Image 1 (tube, rainbow, N blue to C red):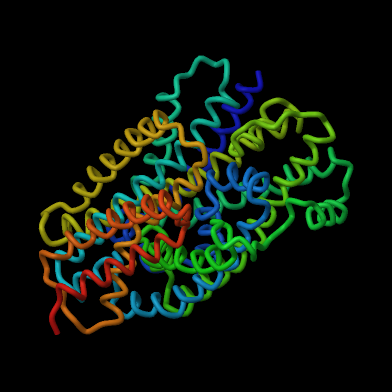
Image 2 (image 1 turned 90 degrees about the vertical axis):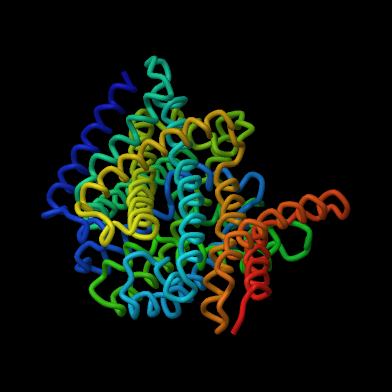
Length: 478
């Protein structure tokens, strides 16, 4: 019966998204799909991007982090904010000055077609893997904790989720997403606050007492200063947070495409700074929820699962938080997942059409080509989700950032070389350098772990970018 309630709620939620998409898409066409007509209000973009960044991965994984790493994730979140400032005042002016639709058009203007296609290829790989991991987690949680006993196979759940995303993005693209993301972020934040309040009530805390409990709890520690070998050391987390934002937001077509729909540069900068600031308290709330769940488990005698990703779903699915919490959790999970997946699907379609196919100049009917590419990307999403199901990763959010360290590093190196030098790389050397650098990073990480006991964390992203920069410099001329 609970599963039926959840399915009805999800059906009503999807109907709302579809209605918003039909209203917002206007005439459709590539101009609205790719650029949104450059008429998006900055506050709508900022609020919608907040939900895109949190995603279903954060909703499930971040509360479970506190048991193993306390609240040291906040070190990275603080670094995120300074990264957003770099994007707002350094990269956005460049993109608006060049009037770009795809940000990888800069690489072609600066270093030629080989650089553009190499950067686009790494983005396509990174975004497809990252977005599929996030959507996989959501489908898995729905399958195991919400749809359990219904007999619905995992493959059907995955295909249904991707089909819903494809359906309401197919016509309006980025113009639609600006407004559907506002709706989804509202739903996500409301669900998070309601679940937080319910956990506080079951713990017997007022909101003030809950905050005091989180601050005083042993897992409430923010900073790791002493163990330099730890991946949670402040310097690694803070600096990595800055570079992760620069790469995964500033050099990511998915995140930047929404910013490029604002009316002007000033509005885009306002939305980026606002969004970066709001990201800190939202993540604190997620981590605080994790601590309160650990406290609740102690009070109720609940044995916590081995995987941190399963702590919050366990409390919701087993009825500890009440039947309503399960419905709310499912809604929040789907809202977060759709918020991330819809923008990723649109960005993948945009980047492939603009940077790889060059649809506007090479095809007589570019709108038709874009629709076929959009459908093909949706099918790739389903294939990747089924692949990740077979892998059964133990910590999905960590896997996303590790993948980013290898695949986003070449983007960091390419953009840094273009921005900070006046040299021209050898065109055919660019893809070889960008493939060799991640391979070298992997071997270096394996060697330092085996011989010195030191394992690279998220700083691998910076090392990867540095190797690409050095390789491009070696094969370049003035």
